[in-house]
Structures are given as C-alpha cells and as structure tokens.
Image (cartoon, rainbow, N blue to C red; front, side, top):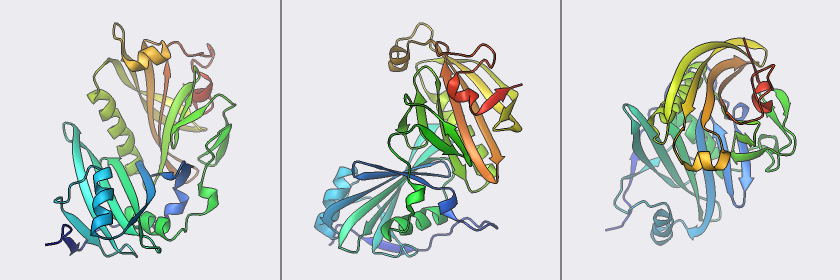
Length: 295
C-alpha cells in the first residue's frame, strides 16, 4: 500500500459578487530562498524543494513540516499541477482558531513547491487556489514584490517615508525602534478586514505575560478618513517578559483599525511602547503619526 492516498474531493469556495483579483491585494518578499506573501490577513510562505514529487521525495518534505504520512491528504482539482492539500487547525482561545493550509505541488521540473497558508479565522479556498497557481506558474509581477531594505512603503496608495531605522519583522509588519510598529493587510471585503483585526485582538487577549488595563472605541482620522479604532493598553508592569527586556517599556498602546481607503479594504494594527519617543502634540510616535490622528 502506498503511503500517500490522494483523494479527489470537490472544494466549495465561498461565493462573492466581486471579482477575486488577488494581485491588487498581494504583496511579496523574497527572503533567502523562501518567499513571503501577504493577502487578506493570511501569512503565506512558498519554498521549493529539490526532492522529486514521488512517494520518497514527498515523505522527506512532509517530515520537514512535521506532517505524518498517515494524515489525510486530498487532491485539489483547481490547482493546475499535480498536488495534494492538507489542513490543520489549532485553538487560540474560545471560538478562535488558527488554520494552517498546506499545498504540496509538482513543479514543471518534477520537484516540489510547498505553499503554506496561515490565517486566524475564516479562510477562502478560491483565493488560496489562485495564489498557488500564480506561484507555480511564475505569474506574480515584480511590482508586487517589496525590498528587504525599506526606507519607505506603499500603504493604501500613499508613499510613507520611514527613514533608515525601520525594518520588516515579517512581511507587512514594520518595526521602527522607539517610533512604533504596525502590521496591515489588504482584503477582498471590508467585513474580512474587520474580522482580521478582531482576530488579532483575540490573540492579544489570549496571550499570557501581561494584562489589558483599558479597552475603548475611539474616533480617529486614518489616512485622512474619519473612522473608529479599538484602543487597548496592555500592561507588563512587574513582569520580565522577552518583550519588556527588548524594549525597556512597561506598557503597549495598541490601535485596531479596519477601513476602506482609496478603494482598498485595509486591516491595520498600530502599536507603541510607553517609552517610545512620543510627540507631545500628536501624542503619537513617529510611525503612527504618519498614518493617523487622534481626535
């Protein structure tokens, strides 16, 4: 009996009235052989393995991803190459789950590409399939790729100058020492963007090592658009977590924002430490004040 029993099943994707043009929402970063992608709140990586797409080669690649031979694998007929698909979920808290979807796909030269999707909350099979096909067929334009070294970013159609001290901690996650941090994603729908920031809030609440001392909805101006944000203060007083050791701070102020900006549905989480360099006039450090104004 072969190790891999590939089952062909029918996947029902969610139906949307609007066209699913992934390239208008996709950003990518080439990082030492792995490519990172961000779309719709997903964190995605793709990696090419020189193993052959057969039982022996696939077994080695599965072990690298800590997937056993016995776990159920299914064939996705909407992927344009020989493949199998596997999904795993892990509970975050309450009804919140993180989904890990893996696509093992045969390349034209018979080697293997693994595309790994991670998302908190609802997933979208149609978007995943379109992205996998675009990756395997090398159809992602250069303009969707960002540079590892960043002095500015294109954020919702606006160029944001960052200077020389900021860096990626992950794709679409920017850290500026003593000036704030942000992560964002472009979504297919505004509802999906709202769910993404709610999921990030749930993850924050589920973490140990600190406590939320305040939580409120506030009015802000986000990239010149009046909207509301969920503001929380997360306190680390008396604790010796890795975060506090690295930053020297005792509390984080975090803003969770979802809004349509210039026809793009944006989810964005902006944060800063109490000991960051805060402008007394805007009450924000340098990075947040480029994006938002407090009312």
